[in-house]
Image (cartoon, rainbow, N blue to C red; front, side):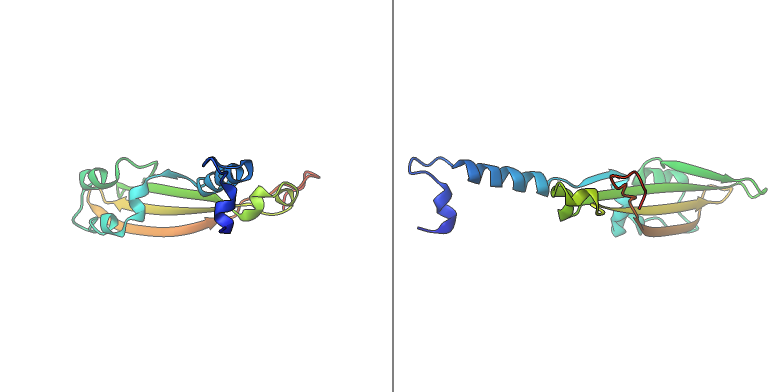
Length: 145
């Protein structure tokens, strides 16, 4: 009999260990979390924003409203909109009870898109970067690593 089929009982039901294995796989594969404006990951969407041509309403139509905005009050009337998209997923060590207390068990990556508008409301500059963020792990003694 094939090793994979040994988990099935003669009546066609799954044994307990095969149920646990299936449940564990589903939990591990669904452990990724993301938040923010997902459209900034799509190069096709971002390439539609043209410096000197696209307006605020064009950007809102493509990406929605920003999560943050910065006004540069130097008499220029410039505004920079910041869009973020963060993804976090666990390492394999996150599922080992004793090991996860001493190791970094979460990877997080943040993508940032900054769109600067001039006083006329057209795009002056576009900047995109991806930042792998370090996640601070606290050990059981209370010290930050």
